[in-house]
Image (cartoon, rainbow, N blue to C red; front, side, top):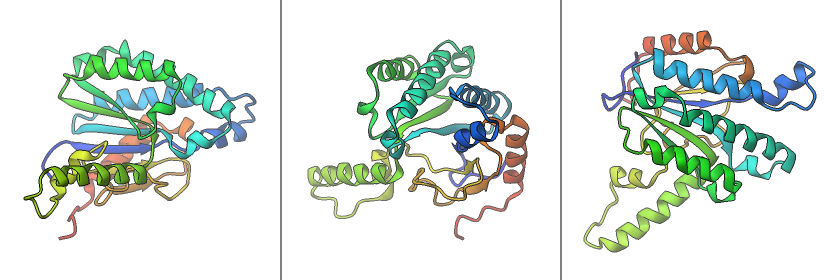
Length: 237
């Protein structure tokens, strides 16, 4: 697989877009999100079971902007999140492959208590795992992440007055997800980041596919990862 700037495992980020358009295209009324959730579960398992070079997987499940959607839309997402996080708790691969699960977002406090409790449970049960990392981004936005890191790093500097310059390695400690992205995949045909991991995406290889998320397959993921392995990454040099 393609080289990593720090010589460590690959960090893959996914923006799973296109579910509502998929439902409209397929004339599915009262779409409950089940197909989207099933694909997410399938892709997570495939990455960690078939691609050992990937050490970190970050999936954007719910953005900060999504929290402004109609309540009906949000309840659909919340129900899906509860179901899939409950599945994670009982997925043997999480324990066999020593996968740590992080649920990250600057607005997690706005989620329903049942969703927060499940998130805390899965995080708690996997916090000692160290081989792989699954980041589930809920109530997450890249700009909010950077602003929060700026505030926290400013507090740190005030407590350390002898330090005149903030090194990026210190600043990155205050990010929700410190590790740089190596690959960013967005499904659904849109060719933009929409605020996903704006700091971490600096040298990531970007892949945009027209495939709507419920139709995204392990085979297409394999093709993208194969193309990534053939890319010459120079990291600005």
